[in-house]
Image 1: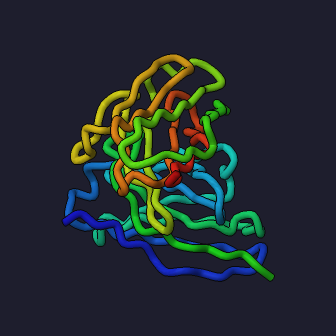
Image 2: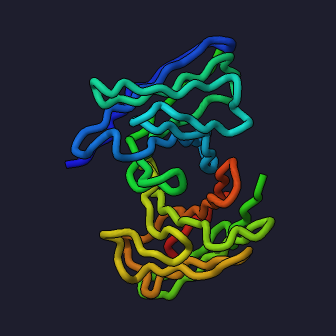
Length: 118
Length: 107
C-alpha cells in the first residue's frame, strides 16, 4: 500500500539547518508532485513549496525563498526538505504530501517534528 | 497573498446534525479550492478538490460548493468519526494558503 515515511524528530539550535526526508513506496514516485507543508504547535497549516520528483523542478513559497531547498533521490524514491538559518518560530511538524498535480495533495506523510531551541 | 477566512472557528454539533463550514477568500479564486480534515496527532486528509469534487474513498456525506470568494463544506449527517478540524486551501495564486481551521466538537 502507498506510504510516505518521514524521518524522525530533530532538535536544532537557532541558526542551524535541518534536513527532513520522505520515503515513498506503493506508487510511482516520479508520477506525482511532492509538496511540503508545516504546522506550528497548535496552529494551522502553512504551504512551503513543491518538487517534481521526475525533473527536480521546484516552486517555493516566497516566505521561504533562500532558506529552503527541496531535493529528491530517484534511486531510492525519497524526497528531502532542507531549511536553513533556523529560528524558534520554525518549530513545527513538517509534512511531505503527495500531489497528483501542483495544486492539491492527496496523501500525507506522518510528519516530522523539528524543534528549534537554544 | 490570498487570505482564507473560515467560519466559525469552532462548531459544536451532535451526531446526525447537518453541518456547514464557510471559507471566504480575499479575492476571487474561481473553484481552485480544496478541503481537508485533520484529527488530533494525525496528518490532514483530502476531502474535496476543485471546490466540489469528492476525493475517492471519502463518504458521500461530505460535499463542497461555491466559487469566486465564498465556499462551503457540508456534512449532511455528522458521524462520530467526523469530529475533527477542517481546513480549506486555495491554489489559485502562489503561495497556496490555508484557512485557519474550523474545529467540529461534540455538543
